[in-house]
Image 1 (tube, rainbow, N blue to C red):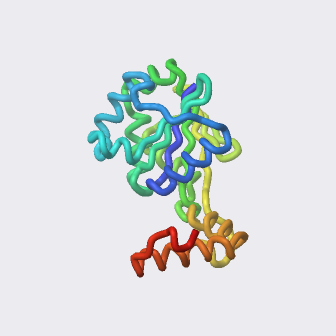
Image 2: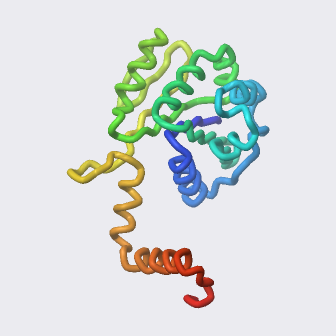
Image 3: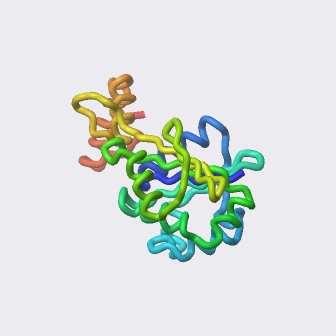
Length: 196
C-alpha cells in the first residue's frame, strides 16, 4: 500500500517523518522504490525536478509492504497546486492499481483544509462523497483525508508550531536550559564540553 502525505513545508515534513519513524519504527527508503509512474510525475513537478530539492522535500518511509511518501510542498499554495496536478496526472489510475490508497493532506488550521480540498475537487470536476473530513473519489477509488493542524485557543497560530510550543511549555525547565546553553555556545563561541 502507498500513502501520500502532503504537508505545507519542510518543517512539517521533518516533524511527521520523525514522528512516524519513532512511533511505527518505519525505515527511510530511496525514491526509486516507488513505481516508475510516480517518479516520472515527481521529476516533472516544478521545484522537485532537481535531486537536492527532492532529498530536502520528499521522504519515503517503509513498514513491511507499506510506503508513506511525505512531501513538504513549499507552502499552502504549492500544496494545493501539487494536489491538483497529481489528480490530473494521466497515470494516477496506474498508481492506484500499483497500491496508492490514500492521500492525507495536513494543512495549518487557518487555511481550512476541508474547504480548500472541496474547492480544488470542484475546480477539477471530480465527483466525491464526503464523510469525517475525508473525500472518497468515486472515479479513482481514492481516499483524500484532511487534517487541520494547530491548536484552538486565543493565542494559537493555527500551525504546527502550536504543538511544539505546547510540548515545550510542559518541559520548559529542561528545554530552557538547553536553549541557554546553545545560545551561549553560539554567542560566545564556547565548546560544548564546558557544559557536559
